[in-house]
Length: 287
Image (cartoon, rainbow, N blue to C red):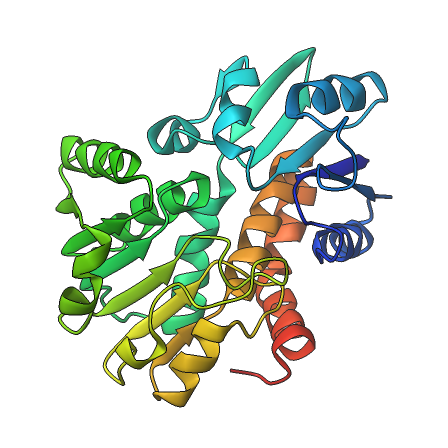
């Protein structure tokens, strides 16, 4: 089974290791290639998708900055991808392209694996692009009472707030200059921007805003211990690292790539063990 990942700044991604490992665990010979738009000006989403289809690939994952574009290439769109308005997984099936959003499902699984039955409460989400949309919808499904959305593109944050409200969830866009005032009264702080990635280091909000009553999630997992995660640890806040999303969205994507129900079930059974493995490998401890 030939798979791949299309995105920017992905050469240090652990996705090839995860999918090849899942292939071995489920008895499917699997390869996984990286198509990094930072390495070649020729890498565009549509051109690369057409290229890999011609080469016999079963599917690809899609990451920043192509998730919202990906849905436009699909012949069929899953309910989750349609609701979120972006796709991180494209499956090539019977001559058609199927769009899935496993960031949405993976975030919810990762939340429960990391934070148990804790109620999300009032949540601040910084970044409302592809992964931000998925996480915002995911956290509302988990029972968040209100979602505050922050983005340098204020119109994009406002559009997502409107979409969430249309689905019956409490949400509003928050101007960047009000983050400091609102953070203390939030229960959850979420980063869905590239800030903190090895290619764009930094912290998406002042570290001193993180307090012990917060739970903190950073979608960035390269490095796994971002400046935000380090600040959360220092403040003794609860932590959900990007490793959780990486593992659970990856397992869900692999299940979509599988053509056999037994193989899907076998992949699902490996999720908890893989989460423990990558937490040790990438975070250096079991927490």
